[in-house]
Length: 177
Image (cartoon, rainbow, N blue to C red; front, top):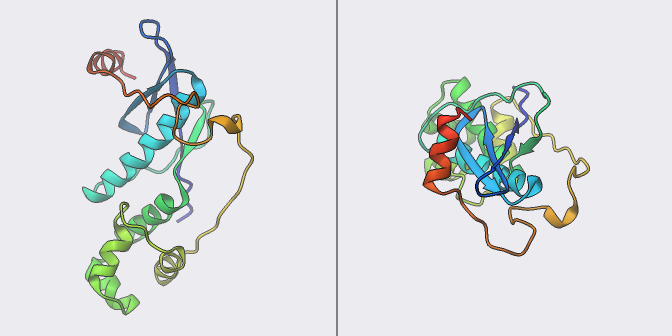
């Protein structure tokens, strides 16, 4: 399994309320907004992490990231990507959590915590679980494509995040975005 948890984001200018609406085609449940493109991308990255965590909790498939196209790309934090990779490896090998716990010689509750996106797990423990399933973790550091003052999930303006209104979500859905 070679997986990159990077997904393209579609940005659409919001002519009514200003700013940009961001959607991720591979995750139809992700729709968010920002006052500018950088803020919308930061919000999309945050929403992507939540969408992956929700799919893991609901035992749903996590789509493979498509080849890079012309859309701007966002990724999830390393801990979310590592937990998602473990989740995918377990599904691909058709293992139960109990079987993985036996293979790792650990309590089943610990395996559940490794797969819980809300639980802070130590990276060496996640790496050893992935190694037991025949996978290795590789970390890549790349330059930011946006100004440093926008790095992270805030809007970069010091203002609290603004979530899209129900009206904006309905309008984006009707447009098929």
